[in-house]
Image (tube, rainbow, N blue to C red; front, top):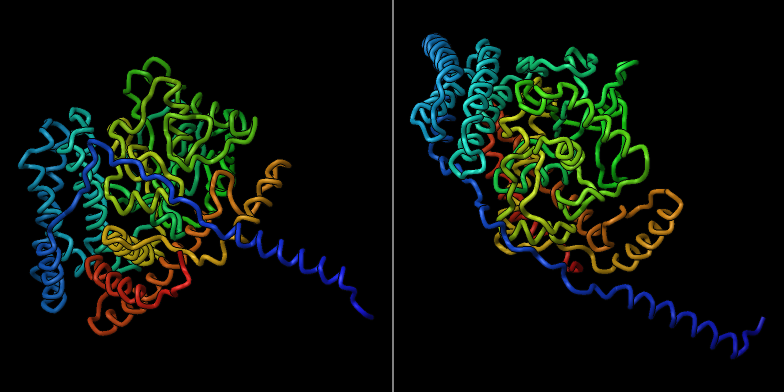
Length: 502
């Protein structure tokens, strides 16, 4: 059948219009603004590489020599630190006290002995919990927003956990998936979850298994272990537990306890407000009222996710705000020391995802709030090494961000992403969820996907290298070695990255 010239002109016009639309949708636009660093922000650095290497050397020598001498040293060290912990639970000391420096050194020195002689592991883990309780008791009298107190809390709480996990990784079969903390009394409704009594108003901080989870955990001035916050509500009649959370994909949502646990989590910590806080003495049911308020709002209408991380705006909520907003309304201000994000490269990356506020509430930092006690902590022992590998990959990538690495994405995918964003906007009008989350731009979605691919690429190379290391050395690599491997993989990634990226 012959095609008329008019039909050809129409087809050409349509094709030209489509090409024009495609080119228009391909225009990237201006980069998002990057807010300045917080005035009080300052990145923490251990600056103790020599110590870490010496601890590894001690571990290797102890493995070769056997546990005869090490057993006596470990038992004595554990006993001595246990006595110190009890003293610290009775006599206040300032955050800069030399006694606390001594506790840190002694606890780290025990790590290689326990790693080589795992029958001490259970006592070492229990000791870490007791010392954590002592440090948090001490911090009630500190100005936790000050640099010195903040650094002390981090060195102790994060450092002790890191030392324990290095020992655990050498003997994963001996790991303790559940470590109970302090049984803080509560007058609110309760239920039992996997052997732990959970109360209404308890706060769950967790670590997901996704690349963005690792970024949230590591991406602040005090890199941490947790990436997500959920608030527990326990029904006073049925004692059924619900968890109120804010998800990037769908905003604020409510899940059952089983549903919460089904979502991949590498670790979970249960935090509870101290019963002796003045607002709880006046109203012991306050945590339950806060949880009920959060539950009511979550069920009454859609609350979008707050990509800007503005903890002062309750109209949209990121995960930490789910807890802090309702507690704040009832007179309890969580995060007595705000999180800060100072590094220029990290701020540039987070800005590309939509973050606008760099003095905010990070999940990891809630652990350092002296108003809260640790009730219990679960670790997925089988995934602990992957957790550390993901951290190392992110840490190395963030070093690259400070050196100028950009969050690139394939430029030719931008038109499709913008069409997907428009489709998501239409679905949102009917209360449905599209491929691009509400509040996230098409470019941010592309960068998020490209970032996840990059992190998985680096983590996979680190996993392969760590397997070779274990085979050659006879023991799994500690974190500082994983970080070296991740730096090597990140350098290789720069050479492997395709050029068709923005």
